[in-house]
Image (cartoon, rainbow, N blue to C red; front, side):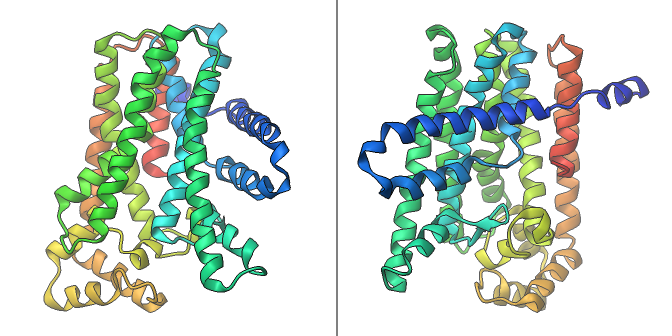
Length: 366
């Protein structure tokens, strides 16, 4: 950035507190309405709604923010700020669904420093059922919670306040977002049950499970509401895909080397779960026989201890896998910024905000 751009960036907060608060208020109000609708069914649904509230609370609100700036990039009218904020909040329901289902598939005990949904549901039934049945209930209830959140996302989008034609334009990318994240999740599940450690497979999962639905599609979704033309939509894709990939690669690095206080999950959790990331694929590709033995013994071992995690981390350092992934993150970030520089975005605040978002997403300060 130039000095002027840097100074301007310091004055722009791309995810303002009032925006975060508005997203939270919209989601809370929507869940209040749905709970009131189902009140005649009695108090048995109270835990379901409590879990829904927890699923949408906290988080970075990154995806709604990209939708907001996509809308701004296309010249969105200020008098529709409330409408685009509501539409953007619908993406958070999709995101919450993905996290709940992802935790079930990975059997993750925590999410954002709290018990994951299926573990919390299991805990609620422990006094009334044996361990097997409480565990089964937890998984079943969490699957239903994710289904409910996904269903709600469509309903909330319809409540945005935009006219039908505008909603139809936005829905094109909303539908792509939802379809692609499920397809990406399936590819991820497939990879976890495979013995292959392909870098191309790892990058394909990254692109569809995370990259497109984190940055590209939310940007295009927001822009579509403001009648964005094809050149801008294409430019937002050219910017959003590499940035989304860099964002996920940073997440993968944190999943192995990050502190639990920062990630909200136990340190080394991705090693225990056997996440087939680019980091792991590079390590297996470069490992010596003894290093491969370390990876094979500890990677995907749910019982691996701190020493085992440390041994894998050392292999990732020594093989150059970590350095290689950091280099890819740098390259992808540069590609995203180059695309942004050439994008037909007239609003300087939007361009600056997206630069700040790029830095935060790849350096993970948000």
